[in-house]
Length: 131
Image 1 (cartoon, rainbow, N blue to C red):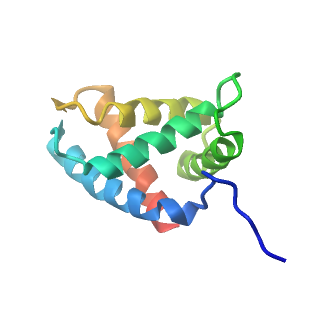
Image 2: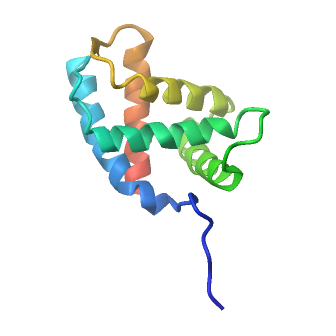
Image 3: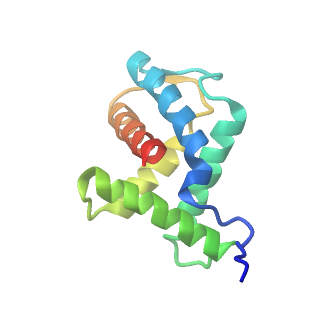
C-alpha cells in the first residue's frame, strides 16, 4: 500500500534547513540587536513567514486556505513552544513569533520587547532545527 501526502503538508524534517538558517541569522540579530535588510536570505525568510502565516491561520475562526497544512504546521509549532516553557499561552506566543517573523524584512534596531521576542524565537528555531 502506498502512502500519499497532501499538497502543502510537510513533516517537521522538511523545515529543518529553514530552521537551522533562521537560528544562525537570529543569533547574529540578537547579538547585534539590529536587523539589516540583508540579515536573512530572501528564500529562507519567505519560508519562515509562510510557515508562521500557516500556523496562525489555524488559530483563527475562519477555515484556513489549506486546513491540513495549517493544522499540521500549528501542531509542529505548538509542540516546540510547549517544550520551551510548557506555556498555556501557546497561541499568544505563536502570534508574537509570527508578527516578528513577518517584520524581519524591515531594517531596524531591536528595542524593548523585540529583544525578548528575538531571544525566544531564536530558542524556538534552535529546538526546531535539532529535534
